[in-house]
Length: 264
Image 1 (cartoon, helix red, strand yellow):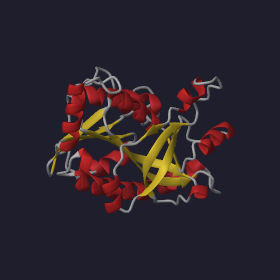
Image 2 (cartoon, helix red, strand yellow):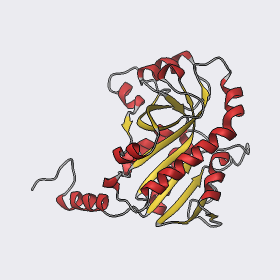
Image 3 (cartoon, rainbow, N blue to C red):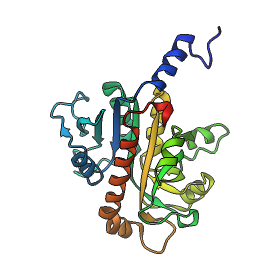
Image 4 (spheres, rainbow, N blue to C red):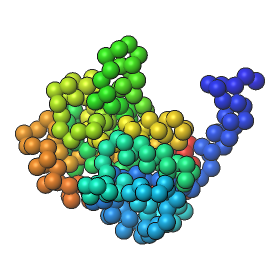
């Protein structure tokens, strides 16, 4: 039998078997400490003082056993020069790659806050499961390069999870700026995005390369096309919306426990 999409028969068999066995190891990637710590406490995780990441990186691993799951929360850490959370696509892609190499997860969850668009039905405190993920600030107006710049990916399909939990579904657009330039806005509209963040598409790119399933859970802190400045609204709502995110991620993890990828 000929290989399918470059995979051998044995590789396809192993992939099929992986989808059937219960999920064991989860990696949850979170950009901000404020978003990470409530979940660390919820799952009673411990900080790993000697994570096997490259020397000098600021990333922090919290780990432990919750029910039947080996859970790892990877916070991007504080930048060693500026002391702020290492948000953005560069840190997110590096952390994702290293975490897959070191921890060999069955599933990756990218959890965090995001901006939402009222024109697409988003409200403060809404929690979305992203269906599609793309970049909005990699504009390369050359045929084919333009598609590469957008980098459209689909999240891992979880129809049973969606049926069970009251999460909204929307497309996620990613860029390295908190604000939105007119050029970004045009790209976000072209992406048909409901939510906007600074890490998702970078993580989606890496998991696609390494063939690890991933889901993206985003809670809305600010309305990008609203009347209030993004920075003001983000700061006002961060604590309350993080609590909504915490609850949603806990529900997702509880649902995942004891199930295989094919049952999600």
